[in-house]
Length: 171
Image 1 (cartoon, rainbow, N blue to C red):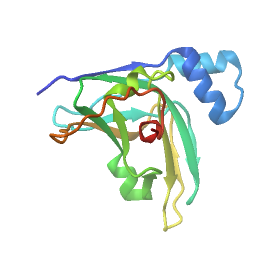
Image 2 (tube, rainbow, N blue to C red):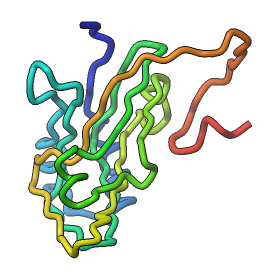
Image 3 (cartoon, one colour):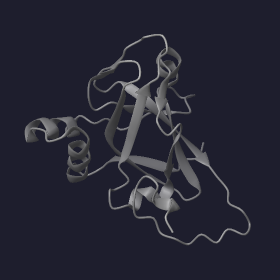
């Protein structure tokens, strides 16, 4: 098995910025506690492909509701690898939980962005059965799978990333 990546927390400053942008101002002591309790993603079993991402907050989503979650996590990985993010299988099956961008793609150079490569998840309870989804603190809600990729023989991309969502499509 290739060992190609390492998860880290973003800095407290970066987490606070992401949290405040998403949820508004928070009591400093409460926010520090939330930050300290962030768990790094991990696999549940030796045979698991996915690394579970754990929720830094308790929340419920009614059918059709959406939430953006600042995970407080970043990932450092070797070139030619990508981290693909999906809902946890059971949540997708029970509630049709969807990532709003279908599959999250975390590129290897995202780690070096000004936002420290802070991974956010925007998820929707797409249940058509009227089911409310509830997630507890530090419960797995999303999983990430590392995948190696190739490029075309005539590829000459040389740009350097500095940004988050959509920044690699800017010319």
